[in-house]
Image (cartoon, rainbow, N blue to C red; front, top):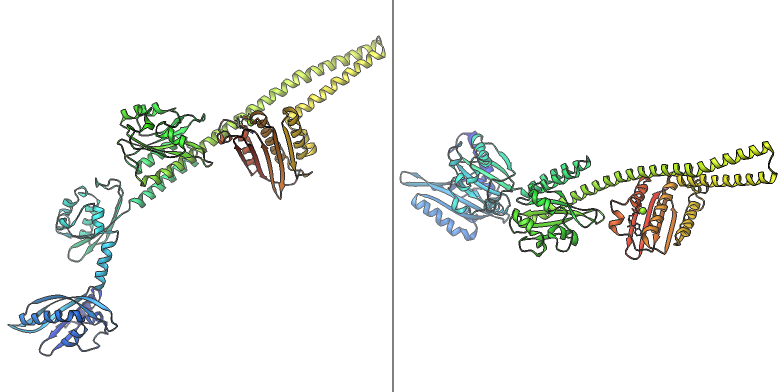
Length: 634
Ligand SMILES: Nc1ncnc2c1ncn2[C@@H]1O[C@H](COP(=O)(O)OP(=O)(O)OP(=O)(O)O)[C@@H](O)[C@H]1O
Ligand SMILES: [Mg+2]
């Protein structure tokens, strides 16, 4: 029937691609001609066997033979069209599902034969099955006028499409796109389909904020492709989670960059609030900071809370029933208040919130790396409700970043204070030295000068006995001793001389003994340092750490016993000062307003080491400094 070779080839190729085989049955000769693809469908080499109706029937699945035979005979008898599904068995025993359509070839009234095509739908069935279960939404539209989306009508869809559209679609088949999704009118979806209708290519796009009123925060990726017969296929996927994650990462990155650049804390906290608000609408975010006194909360950031409310709660108390935030700090755990109007935690605070329409508040503590509460991150809602589970992760990230920003800010603040403190200490030291020089040295030297001229005068006039001159000389000698002592004291204050003269261990022994004598607190020193000498900077730093630790014991600990350990372990130096007093609290150990312990940490850090300061209530305090040993003693 087909004479053109090229055409024949093309047809074969098309059959191969579409898994469609064709056949012609000449009734007179009982010869059946199969196309190459049909042989392949049957699991045979093309043209490898002669086919008759009987040999064909033998290859049909036994259960389908009867039906197939009847369908063919009916077509022969009536000369009409036919279509039937049938299963066939390949030589290797595998079963394929075929769909056959065909019609009778007539000469006048007489049926001369049958022609038809067979499609192997086994894989398609499997594909259909997959399509039913994939998460990707698929829909097929029929295009009327390519440039007019009102003429694009829905032809088919899978269950994922119904989930994505949040509606049942079976009753919408045949409806126009703008009628099914009115919110998409003139939007990206219509433009996407129109592009495919126009140029027959594959196009894709993504929507990051759906116009769908049912899911305003949703992001959807869409791909549209041409299908035969003026149809367009649409594959769409909900990418809300991944988009959110990506946008969030980018937002986080920007905030972290600002922290690294040393931006003002208020700006950074403000940016964190806005970032979360962007991803958790309609929540309003707020950050409060724990006041250095540890008893109150201070305003941190709240870009969209009413100003009057922000001012009203600035400085509110931390406690057992102190709204969501004050309570969250108190409990060191998140507090979900679903209705501010009725929750007892808000009894004393609801009069501030309700007039502004704030009805629910979920607050999460912001922790430092060592477990102190630095503040709270809260989400407010204008209706009674709980947070969404998907916002938990978001808030966890936000509190982490806020924690970094706050700690960094506190550290900078502490360093500024420390510098100022050191400056002030140096100034005081200078004043002290000046006073000492003026009062003691100055007076003693004046007295000395007077005594010397007294002697000179009397030696010259020779009016006094030798004894009186000797007496005077003795006074001069005593004044000189005093002068030497004062000079020693001043220089020892500037830098403990024992350190240089005898080395670190001797200086420690001297300091421990001096401490015991002055305070009456027993002080034991153990060390394996021996006469090992350390470099000047390390010795000075360790000595100052010991001084600060012992001063703290005397001032704050109420202890009866102190143990000092100074150990060299390979190239690591460890100093421990352990008392049996009341124990420093974590708040004091890390508080931003005491500079002694901060100085201890700073000294350790500068030597490339670290300090641990820990207390146990009623059991005492441990100050430990680990530093690497540096070049041998100078
Ligand atoms: N050995 C200790 N036992 C109990 N509490 C301590 C001890 N050492 C420190 N503290 C507490 O920790 C706080 C901080 O100590 P830190 O040395 O930093 O400051 P300070 O001694 O108060 O003042 P300064 O800046 O003059 O040293 C102290 O105020 C005290 O409350
Ligand atoms: Mg101190």
